[in-house]
Length: 103
Image 1: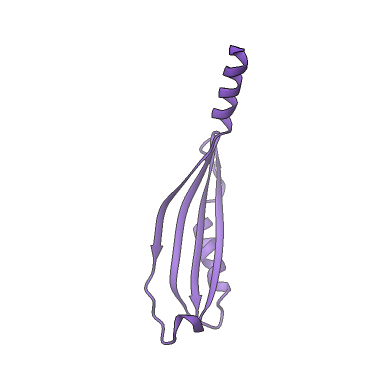
Image 2: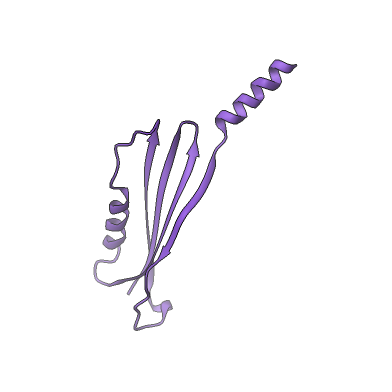
């Protein structure tokens, strides 16, 4: 019985995960029309890290480029950037979520 309890505890500790939001930033709003006249665009990029190693270091630039590409004829305003991390067993994922108003 004790062995089963130890095994269940070890599995729970290994498979457990946490999430945290580090930064939530909003740029200025420069709009000449009401906010309802603008279109909301979003972009998301991730960086996967295993044992402290990652091959993708420009994921923030990728998210910003994607956001700009969704508003080719207009001007982005009110850009909201959320930086968060999801932790796993010996790995984690950094996530950038950007939203902005295209007008």
